[in-house]
Amino acid sequence: MNDVPRNDLFLRACRREKTERTPVWIMRQAGRYLPDYRAVRAEYDFLTMVKTPELAAKVTVQPVDIIGVDAAILFSDIMVIPEAMGMHLEMVEKRGPVLRDPIRSSASADALRIPDPANELSYVLDGIRATQELLDRRVPLIGFSGSPWTLFAYMVEGSGSRDFRHAKSMVYGDPDLARRVLDKITQAVGDYMVAQAEAGADALQIFDSWGGALPPEQFAEFSLSYIERIVERLRSTGVPVIVFCRGASHSYGRIAESGCHVVGVDWTTGIDDARKAVGNKAAVQGNLDPTILFAGPEKVREGVADVLRRVGRGGGHVFNLGHGILPETPVENVHALIRAVADLSPQYHEG
Image (tube, rainbow, N blue to C red; front, side):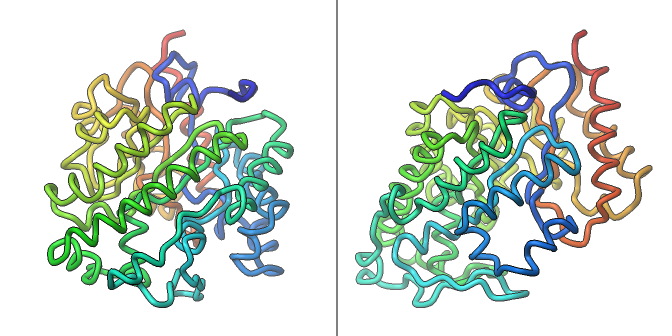
């Protein structure tokens, strides 16, 4: 277990302990909306930044220094796992990740290897250590991974998709093959996330970005059941675990039953409804619509007030957006978000 950060609001909220105010961080907070990030990105390509611990640490800490968030999240990418499992990864500008030779057969599934995080993913672990040095225990550091289903969707499709036709066709047409691939990914993700905690991550988030592509029954079988296995493995680390399944509001209660500490809520659901579904099983995280940050400081403050009102009194809430911050977001509106949470949230907490 790491030493407690000087600002431990985020960790206390994850564990549903008392806090003086609601902590706030932002998904994709180390990104292109920040001029300081763009200055680094102008000199290096994305994967070089991910794979160079000093650069990853530098941009991870920028939002802590510039906008004053209550937690840092490691600058990395969910696609490091497919690459470490033996797939060829390219980051194509304006298209995103592309995986050559997607998994479409038993032979290609057999060729996937289970990486040793200390070897194939050592740069991520070194990035965690370098980031903790820069942070100097000011705030907690969050490590993360994509969920097995989300990684499977990319690995079978070969890139992002509107409908993930190939991935879903395998689920329906060859479920045994799908399970074999998911089993391998689950082992890889579990090993990787345990290693992140051991390297110094204070909390871990599982991003199921494409969970909403599956109907509820298939979500339960081909996404949530594998997340549950990972959450169970992470118990031994002692760090809080956040599960964010975009588009899966039908299953918030079941997600909370996975044993995770926090259920992430996207912007398409009222966080009051999500909190009712979660009950006293977990904290909730979210869920301001990212696009409200284009509407100006006054509208941002109104949005923050609405989210806080819906959550109501007591702990167990981590303020965040309902998905990642958009690259063109004005920085001054992000500052307004952080100020609004700091100004408005204490009234919902004891003392």
